[in-house]
Image (cartoon, rainbow, N blue to C red):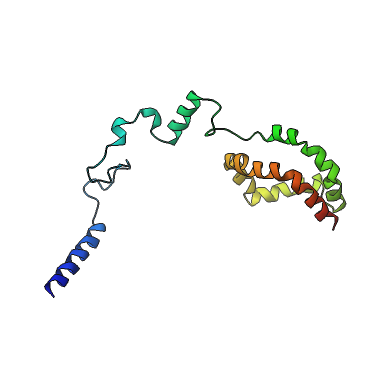
Length: 157
């Protein structure tokens, strides 16, 4: 019975220490350590070059080494649209004329812009430009040759 009580006291003390105050300063250091506080391994902040400390520093360092790197490369939407000849494919599929026939033209799209602004869609797009350019645009542009006939067929209905 005594070992069970000892085990219960040890477990309770261990859990209670997790909720103890941080100390006099009240703040923990935001610096991460590979040693996990055990004194093993090495401190990366002592032996790592200043160029590699943090993501922004690393991206700048990679740009200095090679301008044509995969880390900072942006998808060139306009060049790829020209290469795939998507404007001509859109005309050939008749997407724009079918949209006009269904009652959706540029004037109606222009009237929808204030609504999009009210809903916060324009500011959302502006704040996520890199994500849209490097993730969404390649999916849409590269898939457009296959999607344009499907969209044209759907607009006929």
